[in-house]
Length: 615
Figure 1: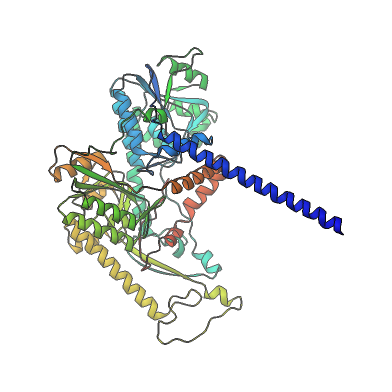
Figure 2: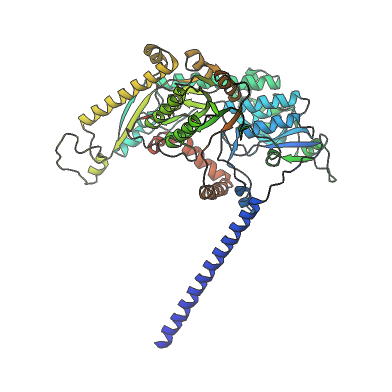
């Protein structure tokens, strides 16, 4: 027995020593890594040079966003030190534009190659801005080349702006038009015995239709068809102008797929060539040979390419670190869903945005504010907090100009309404002036399983909003009255901000969604144009001739950035399993829009949110 205990003791002691060794080794390596990164961060980074006769390889990776977190040198050193991939989940739109416009006048750049294979989600207005930059690049006398194995619809829009479009003989161009399709859950919720108590104002406010209906309402169908048609017409017009083909031809390419494929024996690449969507069918080695003819080829015949990430390090970035001696225009980006609290990835935190606006108001050098909005809305309460702070900024005598991105609807329009001017893209989706509440109760499913709730209270509302019992008549009436008051507030905000009558606002409210051009005609938008045009307008309103523009953004701690880095790498690992990732991404992005409102944490339970996801 003694020998047995002795053996157990030695095994346990060995295990403890092993754990202690591993722990000591881990923390020593971590300490050395941190010291190494800190030292490297203090070393001035040598910017790469660009060799003569180089081709800019414009690699657009991940989702295209208005703004990412502030870049810190430690991030790059962290990636390099641990051998992490440089591929990002997001690419800032302005970085793409800056690179193209800089390359246009760079004598060392002779051509531009579009690398679109890893491009993620992008708005039509963003595509148009990049397309305009590519046109300017071509007009400088430098060619743009697009060469892919296949093109998605978004990828092809950009490729259409190239002098030459090459396609792999085994590839294809996949155009399908724009559509918005949702899953509807009314019958499923009834079978699950879940009661959703819905309160909303606005005939066109369709955010909650997935839980109240089994199919799209006629009102939502009509308004959705209207703005989808506008956006698709714009897509076809821009592509047809660049490719010298007709919009009718593009639609025929899609609508007559079976007959078209039969004529070319099912060859998608040959079909694209037949319709003039591409210039030539080339294999990869043939494309490399063509690119080599546009640049100084290396000894092995490879083209001389400079990567997008490296080239950005030679480019002066727009709207960063303006001249401290000049008067300034502050640019604040509001991107994502609106909610109380602090901002995070894909979320506009009211506390964060209010703090940034307050800082801009207190800075004497800042003479105007441009708010770039890309949001479908969210919490009505959070939207109102932001609007109140914008009013304080205006009352200080400084103008506020709103520039709308892909979306600026519902709560996104709530915070825009009081601006001195509102600018939008023709392809912006805006409006959606409406409001809703939704509350599930589970008494039926509990009762069917033998679970009941009972008790007493001192008032009619003492039970509160208990999810395990039916919603009382008193509570339902109270919630509807609160909602109607919130809607009236929304209408009044728009009427006061846009100098419109209540009656006029009512005609464009009810939750209706508008394209940028339609919104301008309805009086919800002042001008159609870009962010740069909105900034110039803000300068004119402030009476500025010489000024700097810089972006005000929340600075994230090193801890937050490291945690985000871990999350990014986990996402990239998942994305490497393309089929699985795409399946779940499409399932949840297309089918479960209604669940988004559950995360907004509005204290009044009221949401001004436009749940649109077209593709």
